[in-house]
Image 1 (cartoon, rainbow, N blue to C red):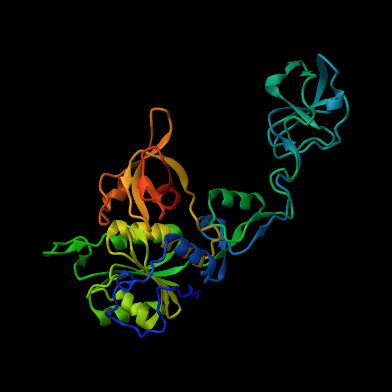
Image 2 (spheres, one colour):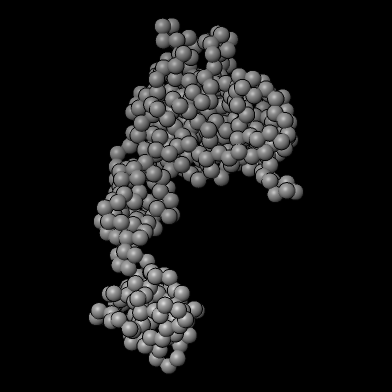
Length: 433
């Protein structure tokens, strides 16, 4: 199991202190978002072995090694359109040329002889080019008279001819190690005759929620209780990333029960994930358990929402402790947990694509921290994409994620955003599959 390095947040020369104050209270510098992402990118390493997966089940899996084609695709030169194949040198220098049509070649068959000068071959899309013919005239661009075809002498040499290996050359790498496979990758592999692909085994993740106030739906809520939204949303996020999830339910606010559940789960999973219990309250037992029985690499971060975020390891498992507030939990999953899980699972490209978008809102911002603002993306009257801030900012508003399109990322050095400024936006469509 890969470990992340100790950061200045973790004072290894001090004994574990269950009553430890937050890093801010101790005067420690909070880890920035960029530092956390760089840490994940540099240090986290794949932890799962390789298995052969049939193409039908390979979508979403992570490729374990480069895939090299053993053949050209297409395997032979072929016609790109329905039309007539001929030798370009048979065309007159100007005007039209009439050639007899002497044979017919459809897809899936080949001409059983060498093509001859001075003839045209009726040919259909995908059919192998007759030996010697170098050009195909599209049927819409010719006229026919009896058994002859009339060709335009301006037809370009090599027109409508696909060369062997034009798509894939034998011996070339068609899919690179660490790629998360999508539909196009599956199709490309099939085009080279493959039926299975070498993939990393799926990451096994144990998932908990925490808190005496949290209960599973359905049911009648007692005073002060809430239904558990986080665990269900996080499970869906984990499965979208390609993880195999063990749902271990809700941990009570009890130090011994939290410690026992986390240590038991660590033995059979590559990663553990909780939501809640990661701050410094009397009932926040998660970060204390990691501190006492594992290594705490990051805890409080200079971000909003989601400041309390635990990244560490315990036994042989990576530990990710999300905040308890639903919106904060989802934001920190998408920006930090997701790339970490992808890296552990063997992926190389873990950074989602962001886009520069014009801001349609203004606001003051606290310097020194990165803020993730939930935004709608709309086109203005000029057709320019603009980001409109959601009208509420609370870290507990899960509806704010349902009703928006992505996260605007306001950097640490920004203290004032003006409408019309360009801002970086991460669309949810980039990270929800």
